[in-house]
Image 1: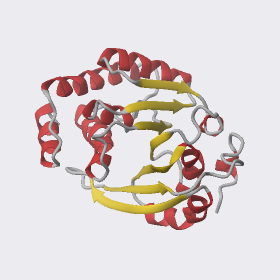
Image 2: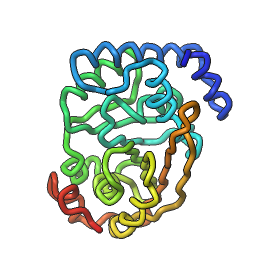
Image 3: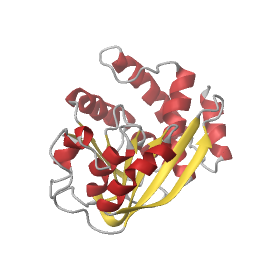
Image 4: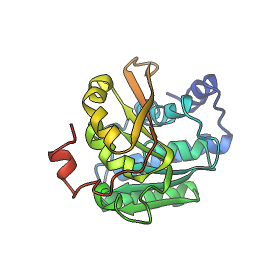
Length: 238
């Protein structure tokens, strides 16, 4: 996928990139591939695939949710910055906080933000479980995103405690989202959320299924959640 094709596909969805934004994505790609030789950031390194499966896929959240206004966004387990850094490039008014448990990835993200000249971005080395009980971050974000990190019952416990009442948790999933939602409904309700909308679409070119689950936070999360590191994964609320 050439840069022009990427920009044209986004334009079809009503998102127009400036020359500077097109350049930022090119630099993002080059930096990702360069650092991937030193550490495992992604198994996908072909340019066409990075642009489609990482950049376009990350931005697809904006086809269904409005990121154009200034919001405080927290991205849980973003790895190499997906989906929040592509969203930040397209919507510069977003303030982004990424929490990730691997310090090497935080080092990469700090370098990336400097290289791309991004402001109002914060990268924090922590487990989501301990981050979620930190009073500086608990229920502090308008939007919390997570992309294919864990099943919905686990993700909800990691993410919903960070969402302000009235805010949103957006889970980006590949296939099987409906089955995950069936088993995750109890956790979502217990943690203060309600499923507002699920969008199913196909990624262009390869035609693979994608799902966007938008969960609204309607009440505060009980103080006992999230539980200790590792517990949500070992003993999910189901």
